[in-house]
Length: 259
Length: 67
Length: 187
Image (tube, rainbow over all chains, first blue to last red; front, side, top):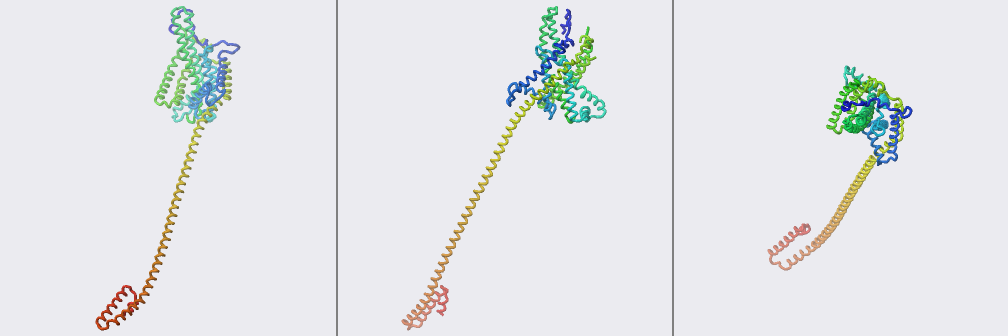
């Protein structure tokens, strides 16, 4: 990066927000839209393939599908939600698969654009999650009961409550969907920007810049780009996991009888 | 020199959550090292704590873009 | 991002409506279809697997229980048989005792009967002897008296002694026999 600053010549346009504004492919359809549809199709086909002939002793594809389903079922839903977890497993599994595939589009060649670096779908998913856990909470506790479990922690002196209850209300009811969606969006956005900086910077160093030194140093930029691609792969998986984990945990906390 | 002061502000606002996330996961690792069988429970709690501290950084990011 | 104005024009936080619409529809459709077709299969396989394992355990437990039950039954039967055998043995022993006692009683009775008869015979023989003796004593006394009278009438003193001797001899005999007729006869 310091080499960029010292570069005098035609001027390096650092990648920015404009790089996320993709031109439409046809009509209003842009690359993320195609990716969203494709992700749904890929997931559906993969799952259907894995259950085409279910058996007690699973085949390889069935084992993969079961493992995926089992991770969400046993290590996320069961731990976070509690005894009634089975109802929410289909939603959580679909969510995890959808997020994972769309995130991984960010590093899969030919796509190389994480769908959720556009915030629209994260907003929509977070809104869905908010509706679900609010509905579940109200159905389980009643409206006032739901407000009480969300904002009224027990065993707190009254003068703390004056501050604590508004904070709990804001953080548990208003901010949850906001942070849920923006965490995903922010990570995808920043990760993609990071990769753009290294790859486009390397490209500029190799092809546009005058200085021989920069041309020689350009492989380092590409090398860092590759290293950060692996890092991004990790971040993308972790973000999908966290999104599902938090969804399950929100459902679990509104279902819990004591705060 | 061109640039957005907002981003500097975001950089500053990310310090606190960064430290917070570090503390959360340090505690998680400590807990698992002491009681490996409690891993499942601790993992959930750790991610909730992580999410709460990271929320601040996300708010910073939002404000950097919005303001 | 380099210029604040540019950031305001292209705010990355503003969603694209088409993405929201397409993404929501795609997700919900995917969710619906997967929920209808795929996940029940997974759950079914899980349930079958659990059932298989737990069913196996349960069956093994049942077999164990059955074996225990049978063993107990056999043991009970065996105990019953043993008691039966003991009973039969006891009965046999008791019967044996009884038979022995009966036989002994019979034998004793027989012995008593024989002894009784022997006694009776003895008594009868004695009676007869006494009767015979009584008759004979008379005869003998007469004989003796005859002999004395007939042969030695000269010496009175000797004669008297002889008679005394004879009488005392008869007395001693009578006392030994404890029968009255001789004593009466002598006086």
